[in-house]
Length: 151
Figure 1 (tube, helix red, strand yellow):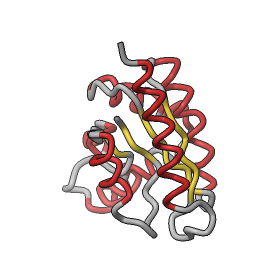
Figure 2 (tube, one colour):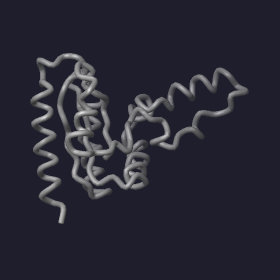
Figure 3 (cartoon, helix red, strand yellow):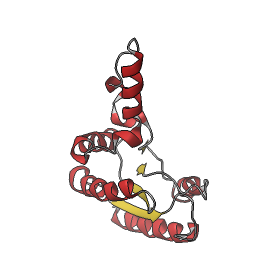
């Protein structure tokens, strides 16, 4: 299951709870540069200025912040390579950029990879926007739906 969009930093144990409660294995994370196979985009370290600039631009959050059509194939490929059977995109309200991209991500996971995807709304730091118990409820509903789909 690829997870994306960060984590609720106000509850760092949240994704551990998901793994324990549902025996879900996180096979990808948008903050992992290897997910996008973009190491080759970094360039030649013998040219330090170009290397630093390319390294910064290939940091996953920067990489996925470009025009979505340039990122889509990397995301689809990563989900297929990791044989994901579902995905969760964490969409923090305070990050308008990722919140918008999660809709494109969900559409691609459903239409091109064929896996159900949950957009889990939240915030990075403020648990008063959506609490841990509310997020756990949404994920429990999602996993219930996944269980019912499994033959």
